[in-house]
Image 1 (cartoon, rainbow, N blue to C red):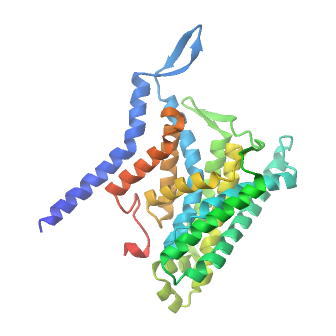
Image 2 (image 1 turned 180 degrees about the vertical axis):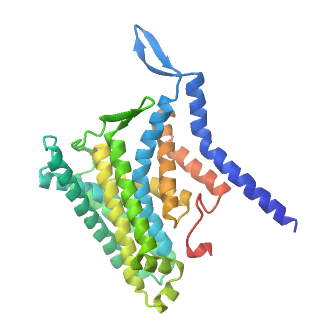
Image 3 (image 1 turned 90 degrees about the vertical axis):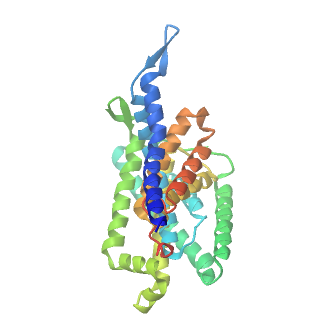
Length: 358
């Protein structure tokens, strides 16, 4: 009986501690900007200091855009884990292949800086569709060749296989585009300001990422929650054997899950190429780490948690890149937050919708 009050107190402290941990960094920098100010330029040899929250607002806008890309990748991690309890470490490199495919299609379709608005929009929509099909098909192929034969094997075998496929895809990217980062055409002029909110510029790049994230997430949520195949996915995630007894084609359902995860990674790859205007064969490693962290932070197996975790990671990344020694400590800050959240709430921010959760 004595343990119940202690457990309740621990949950209470953990919940408030979690809130405090999430608001600590932006609260600190907000107070710092208001009290000490920040330099915005030099006039006649004197620094111009502003005392407002515009810089913090810029960090949030940039962070939500970055987080939108991480969220799209994180959904792939969380879908696969939710249905077969496997961390698909090759997923970040599928995202990289998506960026390479998109940039290759730009050249094939003749998209360039001189392309008109109608041609550019039509070309990018076509590029998005083809890229998502390519990366979705690649993800299904990986599942069919590498993971399905190991479904009854120890989980470590599938995990090592996932790492192996990650290296294979990295080397494909290395042979495809070489080992150096490559700049690509800024087709949408992502740095152009569309409008301002209280002095915070909202650029085309920000709107592009968020505008891609919202409909894709809503479409996936609707599919999982309202269609027959979506119900089959949820049933398989809950109990594969029971789903098979009820007539669900489990293999087909798992392949469908990999298809959706790969398609979202392809969409993220296109958004990344347009937003960052550079691509690299190793970009999937860092993106995969951030996206996997986002999935775990939000609650692995939970789509909404993956989106929330991605946006939070994006904001933390933007604050660290802009404020802490030029971004040298960003990975340490991000994983420090992950550890803190796991200590305070081991199941992640929005819980865990997997068989292990019971």
